[in-house]
Figure 1 (spheres, rainbow, N blue to C red):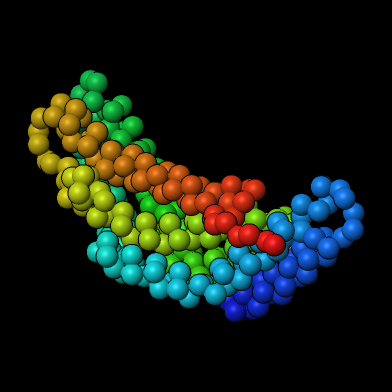
Figure 2 (spheres, one colour):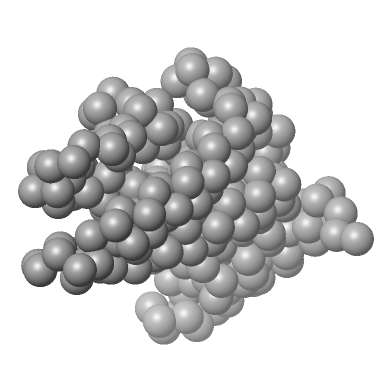
Length: 252
């Protein structure tokens, strides 16, 4: 079983090693810029890692506080996921009943079959999202610690991927439980949309099915893409865009 504080301990060791190497490069009596530049750079990196190790528990606490401020919770989010999955199954059965009743009517069978395919895609997406959500919920702290450890590797070997681990864990831990609230604010919460039993097939095809498709698949997918974009931006900020840390440290 992985221990979070083992990762932080090894990160501290690597930070100390990075600091020692930086001091060594800084003190070398070799007037070669390509070598000397790594001195202050590695010293700065080591200090940055120590800062992350120090504020690790603070970051976890802030994540919880932000989640509470947004009015979201993981328990409500998981309940919503399971409810959506059940909703998709029920809608699939309704569509099958409509198809069986209208399969001999020209021009109506194909659109309903397409919708059943989209419902299957939506169900698969929800199942995938549930798995990812469980991983984020259970291991976000571990992923952040792993990110710090990767960032602590000397010469910035794991800096980009480590920053990505940290950023993705923070953004998705806060953002995923907010998904139902986000969709509700846009009037796109799938649990508030129901396929009517209207005999007017054209209304079902033109209005109700597209609305269900948008709320069930398109809107959640767009939200996940938005979270991914925010993760990339935060990862670049944490990683210092590959060349600098996010704050200035003068080495004299």
